[in-house]
Image (tube, rainbow, N blue to C red; front, side):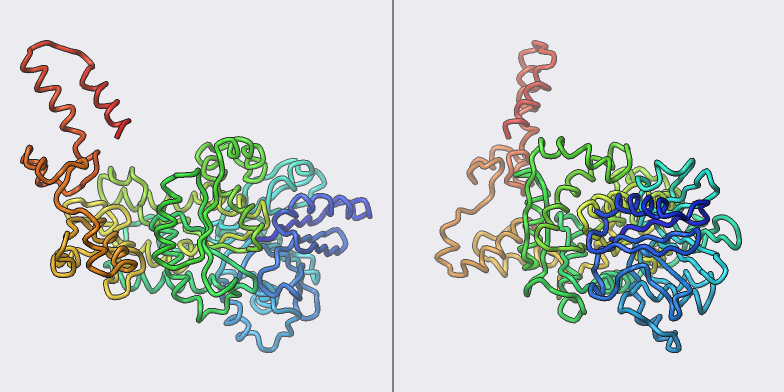
Length: 550
């Protein structure tokens, strides 16, 4: 991730002004600590702070067209740059940077080339032939950009508002999917997908299309000349990113750090995320890095988090804090780029409140609203909390083509339908439900149904038990090892005989103590009823106490 700053049409082009631009650009250096660049042309300044990921040797910015009359400063990655170069064979390129293609596309097509770009980006381009300029932000707003206006009539653009706040009378967030043109005057939208109208789509759900499009989104993001990793919380989204990346790593052009894919997870010691992340990493066989922080570490970091993320939104700050701390440790290990799982909940309605969506129209419209607002929340967090330490986060779920495919599906398929066995994000889960070549740790219904044939002794009764048993058998395949483990039905750690005490227990396949919580409350309620002595609040207090102990 890089930092960009451009000041265009300022009244002062003195050495003092140049020094001021350098000073302001330095405020963005955490985003790009590898090199700094500045191009001055009359009353226009184009600055860049570089994080070198693609072509780290020759790809310093600003970048130029063949005769250097067009200057561009870019924060981003253009994943289809090689295909675009093939359409520009008459052009002379100076570097291997993926971003250099922008200057040449503008020279060839004018301002209408933006939709040809496949990637995440924010850039400012200056055409010195007529002193015109454009500024552009990617479709969803994965990369940040701000626009401001100076008292002298100058127009400013920067990756973060900390570079504008002292020198601009007014500034605002540059809207995603827009272009600012000095020729045409003002902002206009360049990204106009069908889903943006929020009309309910009717395309039938095809799981293989969803899977194929997402795999392509991950593969293209393996474009790197420096070591990278995957942020793995153990949830569905990050786990799929890691699984797909691992499958295609060897065939990609990605620079590898050793022979294994590296994954990272952070949390308080003993937290569920750490456990889940470790389980998925063990299944995939990644080189997993489990990072810890304390509550006090989080509290101490809040001021820095707010400075870097540039928001006071409560949920964003909460989510940014561990990501900010993790990014520092990731960078200390020599990693500059990570893949992350943001965007899936917005696209597929993964938040719990989607259970209450009254119909598919409301469901779809809410997903549209959520995607449109991502640049103010999860994109802001993912980008700025990582770039605070010079790490770039890439988000495959927010791939332009993948969003188009996912948002064209009839939302009836995305609705949470317990009666049909569809939980949240069922569309995504089902697309990667491959029994022959599973992407994630999984036990299918068929496998559980045939468990007695695979494991005739102490046959597992739940999918969780089946999964644990397969791992055990991998390490300890002999029957003697099997015999060391007790078996039989149990509830709340009871013996098999005690299960006969209550008919309902025989239907309960979960051995956990929590599975029998209701029996504590029921027993005391029956006792109270028999004695006909009211004891207000006793049952509730006992239940709470019991839950705490279990």
